[in-house]
Image (cartoon, rainbow, N blue to C red; front, side):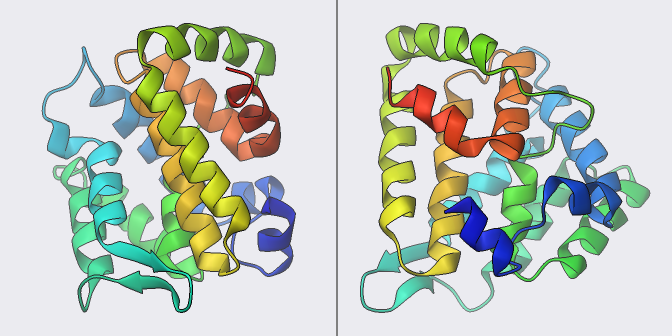
Length: 204
């Protein structure tokens, strides 16, 4: 799935992303994830997770028509919500705007949010340990991640593939929202080896 989306130009490769206008946005998103995740959390509306909540509610999937927006301009509310976590940092907000302009769709932008982990390497062995704990402590987050990943794999619409893949990553992170280093690790693995990460998820 991911290879097809890269070929179509719907999401950047790790190498192109590092050189793109999204590189600075990734640094700011990574900070925003950590700063606004429990127990550091000041307000949920400042977390990128809240923008992701708005995102998944803004679309629905239809087998015949693919991904359909639930309102005329979902992107405006999604990007405005994302900016709340950087309300006092106009420079960071500009990096989000520049990143979005460089990408083909809001769906690619949301993928950037769930892969923002600059400087963090993917460690699948450690991720597996965390998923194992999570499956017992917060099994619904793992079950939801599996369901969304499966929907993305079977969807024919490229934007729907991005949409469900992003929701799968978001669902997995929700089960570790109290542990910023773990959700950062999940983002790094979803960036570098999404199939490997979800191969582990399906083992639990």
